Length: 218
Image (tube, rainbow, N blue to C red):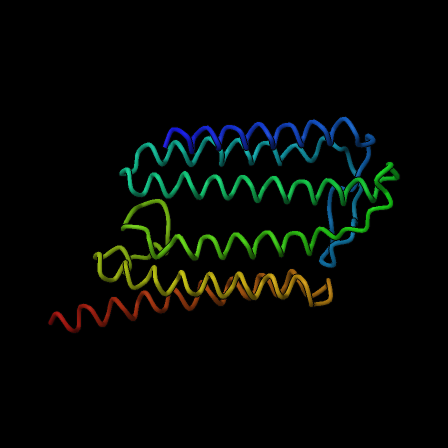
């Protein structure tokens, strides 16, 4: 677990280095907001991008704090999830920064990147990873498909996490496909619709497992 924490701290530092490099390379005014098609629609101060290191610090320090207060088994899973999350955040921040620089008249203006597709790819990979972790998690108060029904007992929890894990993997795969194939103005709506469908189906499944368990017990 100590080695995982070292990796987490290294990724936090890497995020900060990436952010510092962006601030050093970027002109004062860069693209800071993108429309549904992934095109820059607002120019602002490069310092508006400081929410990236803030997020890295929040997740990088917050999840280990939660893990320390969880049992060893779930704490280890949270730390591993934190490593993946920070790695994906680094990739996404590189994508956003490159896209911002390409829209700012900087030496990187020749780059042809789209932040919407980058977001879909990173989110899809994150969904798949979460889907793989969920069925392996024990009942807890921090991670997984946590509904009043799934938390009622271990059997309902196990079945709910298995269904939710499959739903997340499927939604992740569909999100990646959408990010690669759909017109840009449809990528973000598709990603939201896919995630809502997966979440809704998982919540309903959790309730069904709960009812079946207690109806059988009676």
